[in-house]
Amino acid sequence: MATRAETSPCAACGAENAADHNFCKNCGNPLGSEQGGELKLNFAERMRDRCLETLKANPDNARAFERCLQLEDAYPAAHFQLALCHYRRGAMAECARAARKAIELNPSSAPAHFRLAIALFHQARLDEAARAFEHTITVDPEYLIAWYHLGVIRELQRNVDNAIECFEKVVAANPDDASAHYHLGLCYEHQGKDGLAISALSRALELDPSDTAAAAALQELQR
Image (cartoon, rainbow, N blue to C red):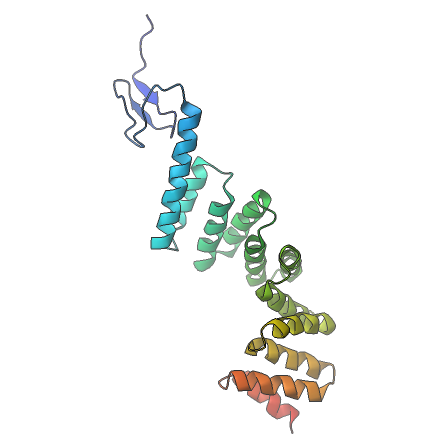
C-alpha cells in the first residue's frame, strides 16, 4: 500500500494542504477529487466574480485583478480592468501592457484599443497612439473621444486637414463639445480661414466662458 504524501496540492487553486485534510484551507474545495480541471475552472470563475466585486468597492485595486490573472490569464475583462487601475495611478507603461493583452484576447474591444491609445498618448508616443486611436475608430466609428484625441495628435503633427476632419466629426455628433470647437478654431486659423476660426472660437467660449485660451485666441483674431 502506497504511503500518502505529507502534503497534498489542491486541484482547484494549487495550495498545499496537510495530507489528512479533506478540504482545502485556501479555497474550501474537496481534496483528492478526480475532477481537478472542473474545480480549477469553478475556482477561477469565483475569483473573477470576487475581482469584479472588489473593483466596485475600490476601482484602484490592481492587486485583485493581478491575482485573478495569476489563476487564469485568458480573461480579457480582467486585463482591461487592470489597465484601468494602472491608468488611474499614472502607470502608463503597465496600462499599455495590460491593454495590449486585453486586445490580444478580444480584438473587437474598442475600449481596450482606446485605453492602449491613451496610455501611449500620455507617453508622448504619438505615432503609435494615433494608430491605436485609428484601431479604436475602426472597431467603433462612433467612439467620439477617440476621434477627438486623434484630432489633437494630427494637430500636433501639423496635419491640419486631418485634424479638422476629426474635430468636425466630434462637433457633428456633439455640438456642445467646447474643446472640439476650440481646436477647430485653431486649425481654421492655421489655414488662414479667419471667419471660420472666429465662429468656432466664439462657439467654444459660448459653451465654456471660463476658457481663457479660447478667449485669447479669439481676441488675437479680432484685432
